Length: 302
Image (cartoon, rainbow, N blue to C red; front, top):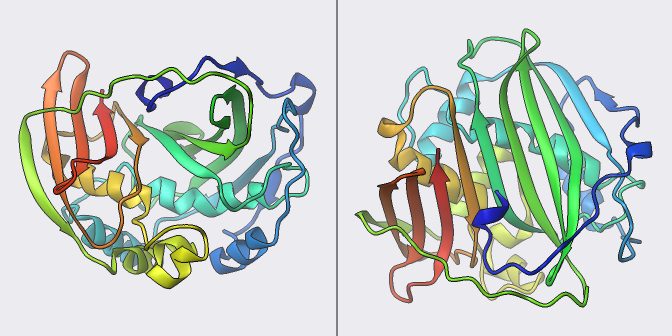
């Protein structure tokens, strides 16, 4: 969802090297342990140099199943209704260990920690039995140079009975100097149905308990300050999920996409305003700080 990014520069594409697309996938028989992955990620050094082509690394797992207890905890945390519909964002959370497993590989040239989550695009393609066996694959996708550094993608797919049912692309920023001039763009937030929300101070810890994503920047002010934040911030994908939960009555069971651009961090605790409106492209939505008007998230359903 490149068009939904905040001010973006002219860019130079540095797509994956065709010679690297045939790399053998890393096959897993179970999801990696998240605390272990985060520990390894904390000590993973980077050797990326400007212009390097990212290898098309991939990780696959078969026979993955959704656990009802975990799904219910996720629904409660994010505000989804307890029904037979799988939240669009759930498989992103479930597959996150696959993505993180790619970042700690020695062949991946960037540091695992410190990558900024800029955008996330999810396509809900087909309904499926939530008791079914799922095959998931995470792949390092394309990358490009921008004024802020290198923007690069992780692509994730989910298959049930060899049919593609769900896909996602997350775009991250590796900060570095590129010499590319920035081009300012005016972001237009939707004006329509507004709701005031209070985002509690412990939402990062609660999301970590459900997702096992114990990134220190989300847990407490003390741990967040170690990584340059003035206080703890909410997980971006919790923010996206919470917005979708507010719109779930308008969502079909399949056949739609949700694109989100993450803007300024959502510090905890905060009071925010959720806004949504329909336009020719679909349903637009945003999350802004109630006091300052700072934009945290801008999204579109199509």
